[in-house]
Length: 380
Image (cartoon, rainbow, N blue to C red):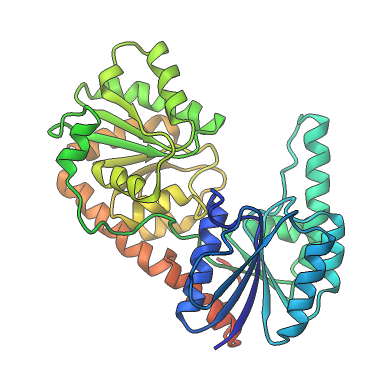
């Protein structure tokens, strides 16, 4: 049995991928018999009943009073590892200085290192990049062990301070159910106004500007290529996307639906209802894309594109259909829709790889191995 102190930027009922991830990690460690204390800003459900886990809600974030309380708890649990679930601007300069003095072992999981420097970016964005790089430098310098959510983060960390602290990659699992106990696809599809006998292609994201722009072009081509295809979108701002799309692409109103932001079970049902999931990404697919993780975990065929930040793992494991550019996505989706055996084989491989490489059991086992001194070494 081991003790852990988790410092998090968010925790349920707060919505967000990091919140769900931290809850999964806390639950997984507790299931192994460890004791876990989570500190997170409001709202954080300190009344949740999760054996082995205590949640401390921070009324004003990581302010002076919160830092004093955390330090006192750490001193009272000298064998605990403090695991910081880091995102940019989670900790201000005073909190980073405090972290440098915190006793005991401190590990840092970089979900994201810092806001990027980009050519021609506005001055306020450059100032934010400078600030977040400085904060990340201080956090990394304090860390006894560095963990990253994607292998690509190692490059950013090296830029902050060389190879003095090799990073270990731990995956980000799906935050949706990985199986449904009962599900009537026909009823679900009919409730959307779709025809259960026609193919359904899905997309799940937060519909950020760059992804939404790629998705619009891809769907416009897909609707032309396949006059029978139906498209289901879910995630924040999906309704707004549909409203804009049908205005600029008349004639697809009955073939395009959005669910908006839904709960975990409803999201899983939507993914299972789809024949193929498509994910256009400006920078390529990475292991931090939890929407892709959800599709893999549920055994669905995924089509996505290469990009500058694409990770070789997906190509090596052959768990998604990778195309070289955005312009090839619609054609590959159409091919898979016509090949039931091919997409079922791809989906089965996706689920197999997910549980081998990405599940919460893999994350917790990795933490426990590192805790016991069995270092997994550099990310690959």
